[in-house]
Length: 369
Ligand SMILES: Cc1ncc(COP(=O)(O)O)c(C=O)c1O
Image (cartoon, rainbow, N blue to C red; front, side, top):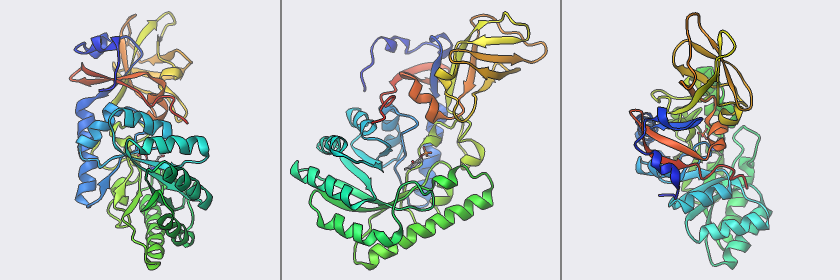
């Protein structure tokens, strides 16, 4: 268990008595979501390696693994470091790790966990190989393929030469291919989402064919996200799914961004600090507690209130006719996008039936390097 001091005294308290703003995870919903995503993967014979860039908590990551994940996916080396510190020992950094400082940290990490990293450049591959082999360690690599997002990743034609280089160089072990269908995640029209996922799956398949035609074994085909995992898992191109944020299910991931089944699991509790303006109430959680780059949080309790605006430290609510809030009254909201909310907090409360069961450090907050 990751160390956290005096807040552990909050274990056993109703979440409504914890100081505000308080970010909490509903454990029943989280467990339901983990089981749902794990089942979708299992039903299609696909391994689940959920991304933890949204949840940022080693405690939550260990629950993902207990729930069927084969390991986790991280965005950054520093994020992977705190996950390794928290006892996670199988980590994919699904991003390019470039430069001596970062590669040095990657080497240190490889000494204490099974590490795989994305690569899309020959010089970078050589840089990683030199540093890792000098340290007598091994890092697995996945070649990053551009499957349509035009972010990182090479074209399928380039893959065989890079794969061969990864096979030939010391210190690195070629594991397979990855890609991220980032351009598909926000698509709301089901037919368009299906078509774009299928087009990305074709690029995955083409890259695999090219590498295998060169006589190189591809063990892992990794990709997918919360916005298309239920489609990507059945298209046959992938055998590892990176979808992870859906276990928290915020407003962004709900509905068109998410396959069937999951429930909202992440909530922000604030406290009313002013009712001085008629028809309004003001609570003590602004955009510093909720984030707002994709939108505002949704008030879910009590009924009859709507988020009108966010200031840095204030939420302004409009009240329906006849609704009154009292000073100190708790208001529960669903964040708009967990990716921009969780990282603002030092801890998340793990709550069941309204009672705090555990306090989880958000150890990955600020881990951007
Ligand atoms: C490389 C990579 N894999 C997977 C994902 C999907 O993550 P999530 O399911 O949390 O949206 C992302 C999201 O940005 C990503 O960048």
